[in-house]
Length: 123
Figure 1 (cartoon, helix red, strand yellow):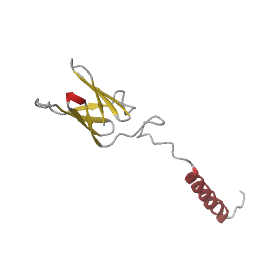
Figure 2 (cartoon, rainbow, N blue to C red):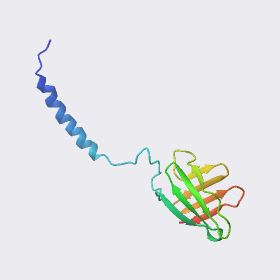
Figure 3 (spheres, helix red, strand yellow):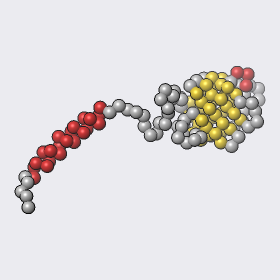
Figure 4 (cartoon, rainbow, N blue to C red):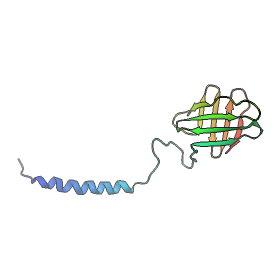
């Protein structure tokens, strides 16, 4: 049985942990697993209003893995807001459910509702 002083392993452990902690702070942030945006992809605001020209507009509440879209139409009663999950789930620019779809790219949105023609909208 070898005779090792007890303090020697503790004396080596502390400097090693200190070095690892310092090195961990030097690593650049490459994004997180909770933020699956592509490089250069603009983050969408939490709530945004988009103008769709003569067709009215839409208000988008971004919840991360889903959005709530409320249409504002000119002259007609607006339909109820619709919640759309990300489709596919690992990205944050395409959302769809049932007869609805939303495509986001920078300051533009394409809103598709059933058999109506797609609306191109800008923020």
